[in-house]
Structure formats: C-alpha cells, structure tokens
Length: 200
Image (tube, rainbow, N blue to C red):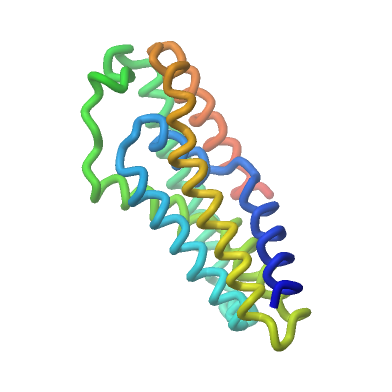
C-alpha cells in the first residue's frame, strides 16, 4: 500500500505546487483571514472528487465528449479575465478598502461560488487530476485506492497549509501598498492564464 500511496502523494503535490488561479485565490483568502477553512475544504474536496474520477477511469470517458474541452477552456478563460479586471480595479481603488482591518468581508456564499469557479472552470485541473493522475494510477493495479488516497492527502495538506500559513505574511500586508501590489500581480497572473487557455 505504501508503495502506491507515496507516489500518489508526491505526484499530486508536484502538480498542485504550480502557482495558478486557484492557489492565488486561497492565498488571498488566507491573507485576509476570510472563510479560510471553508475555502480550503472546498478546494481539497473538489480535488478529491476529481482524483477519484480519474482513478476510476473517467479520464477515458472525457475523450468521448469532444465538446467538453472547448467549453471548459473558453468558459474558464472568460471567468479568469473578469477576475483579472476585478483585481486591477481593486489595485487602483481606494487604499482604505484594501486594508484588512477596514475592509468588509465578502459573504460565505459569494466566496465559495468564486472558489468553485476557480476549481471547476479550470481545464488544467482536469488535465492534472482526471487525465494525468488517472492514467498513471493504472500502473498500480490492485493498489489504485492507495494511490488515490496519497494524491488526495497531498491536496488536503497543501490547501490547508497555504490557507492557514498565509497569516504569517499578514505583517507585510498591513500596508495598503502591499495589497495593491498583490492585486496587480494576481490580475496579471489571471490574464496570463486566460490567454494561455485561449491560445495554448
């Protein structure tokens, strides 16, 4: 079992470490200390569902639905573009609204809706979890469950570490300027990812 759990854990961790839209959103929530547990849990459970689907063989079924990939790709790009504009507007807005102590927190429903969109509208998530992890799990016949559990464990560990570990950076983000820079960087990253989805 360990021989399948560890490779699943390490492979999943290596894939999820790449900076992306979902990770940037979790980091932002962690810095603001807004609904951190709920956001981390939704991201981790979503990953677990996708990993389970991939290991169960649904990656092969995706090839029979040729319309699914472009729908996810362009839908995800549109969502990321809208979020990029929102981030840049925040970066250029009133500095007071970027200060954690004075900023009004977004509602749980709106936050989780954004979190789900970052997760389920991102085609890269499907490629990493459903297709890649799903195909590699076929090498561990008889131990695919252990492989999947290892991959899921890595996802839970990463998201909760990122979300709750972000508070260590809060002294830096006591300055509105730091929030402006973060918003500008997030907006730029979202645009870059959106363009990569449209023009791979």
